[in-house]
Image 1 (tube, rainbow, N blue to C red):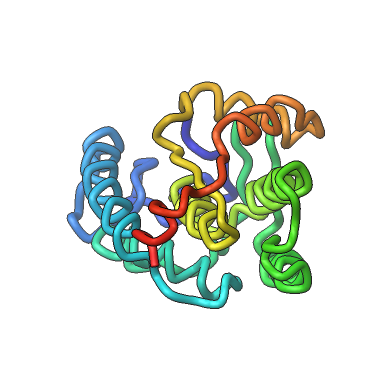
Image 2: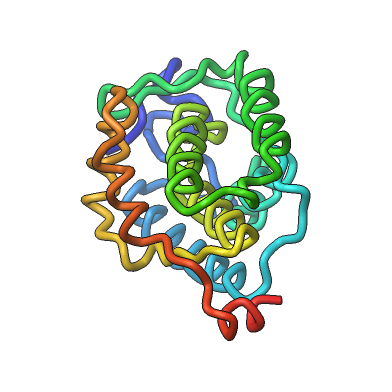
Length: 206
């Protein structure tokens, strides 16, 4: 489902809802296919060679840039339009920088969740997921950036997750519920799919 934005065709080719892109593709379906292939390959690279950073907002934006720089000239830049999707209103564009600072400052103050037991760790990951989902800082590609960043953050804390093992429809439903204050479904998904690294797995990621 496309985003509802104001104005409706911001960042799109005239007379279309297709985002302006480096391939000059004017068809939304074709653009989605190209985008999916490129970002899948880029995300696979991140699995093997994560982008180094301080787990701050600049790190978050760098991941978006890496995933989408071959497609959009604005990759890694925060959006300038307000957006809603499936009944969820995301952070106003004018508030993104301020809200992101609060979110990532808290992450740093919590030592990136590295000192927590499993249950508390999952609760913090759920909260961070919900916060960054509502933040939705980019014009497109928020979910993919969020999952790549969270994977790296979770592994940094000594746990593991493979988002490819989570049913995308289940994650979408859980995300919609969480945006409306119901986090039980999302919490259950993370409880099931986050696990401690084995010693071998941890060594291989160093």
